[in-house]
Image (cartoon, rainbow over all chains, first blue to last red; front, side):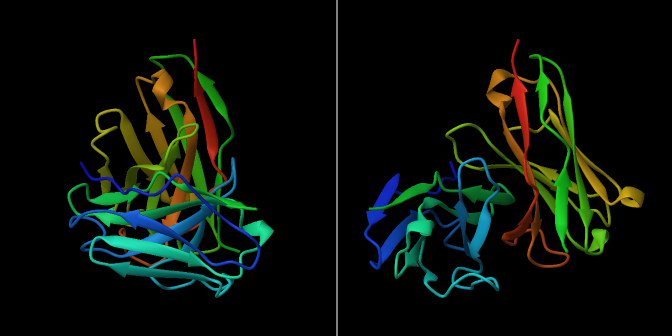
Length: 110
Length: 122
């Protein structure tokens, strides 16, 4: 079964750097780009990272992405209170011929 | 500006069908695929399928295949997603989304509709 696995929660204090991991398999992360989304409750996801490490215009450079093998990470530096949200990874899955998403990581800014 | 505007919330009985619309504006409708993604309360995003508005070609997730139909009306720049034989587990927020790149289906989604809440309840 094609699944992306993320930790359910993460936390940090303002100004800190936090990372969120995303683990997949050869049919998804291992052979395709990873994207990351930020989501507030009841609202549509917002694209933060695409093609594993590219930022859309308007996304601060405090957000960065990386990928290695079948895993990926999202890093947020200079943490701010407004970063408190759910963060989900996604990748195309070659066996499904569609994208799959991680379960989301709830980031708390202490 | 580029946007996707979806139809409003709906409540359906189990066994019924629901059809949601997604109207595109601000770009050439036939240049970009449209995907449908849903999110049940407290659950992860789940991809349902996509359509190429230029050709009408579709691809559906195996989880909803047989119950979902994605269609388009090019004259209205609108894509539709119909889900039949509704179950309580289909209660979710349904989104349409557009990939970042023209003529691609396997890209990240940079444009999302605001979401349509579908509640299935007797």
